[in-house]
Length: 296
Image 1 (cartoon, rainbow, N blue to C red):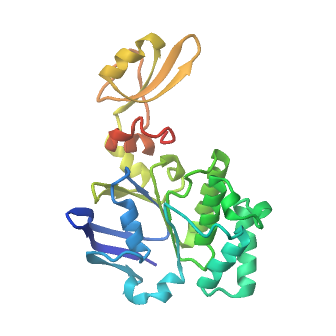
Image 2: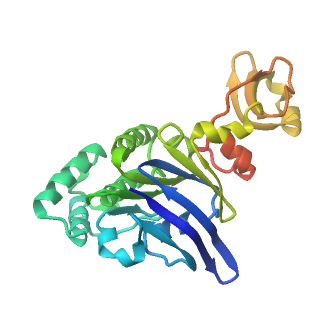
Image 3: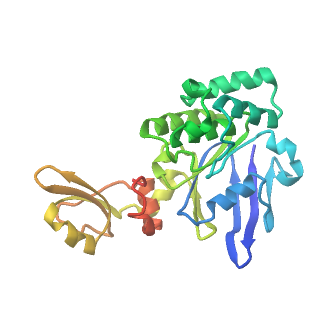
């Protein structure tokens, strides 16, 4: 089973949002990493079939998804970045409504809704109106609606936005198990959401796919460039001027441990460490260093 994206381009007037993207998605979890504005959401909307490419095609099992139509939608689930629904729906009513749109059988609908509400810890609020739920709970309702039907492909755009740490861990574990015989594409700037569960990752920047590979393969490009060191707190401002510091942590005795990029040791007693996927993200997207506290 493959989802083949071939020579895909999307232009908006004088702006190219996605440029000549080629990638073949196979079963497993795929991470789509990139800063805001990289083109991730536009790419996912085209995969969802709700946006028409300017050029190029997307094929599922060798067939154009736009020609497959209802057949494709019946095996596809999608959570957009901005999930919204009627303010008058309860959780249960909304999921039943979405199931009806997907032509699901009544018995199958009730069983699947109960299963998802349990997995996503929403059972206690199933009869509450969605508008009265917290942001994290509404996000979980969005995840549930995307997973109602008999999926082969699941596309999630920033799925853990608004989830607390415990909810994010449960979500990752669920997705890891769910993806064994399905294609799951997760777009995120929160690298920890996919670092340990992704089968493959695609890095997108300036409308193009820069690289594709496993976490281990991708981080090799910064091997030997990530260091840690312990410094007195008073030295931090000076070191920030000299080094690309990507993380810092207060320690005892007015010391600070730092993680930094460098081609060689830049501080006495520095230790070279194995790079992580989040290190690579910050190497490629330095503008995100201080923009979002949940990157690291």
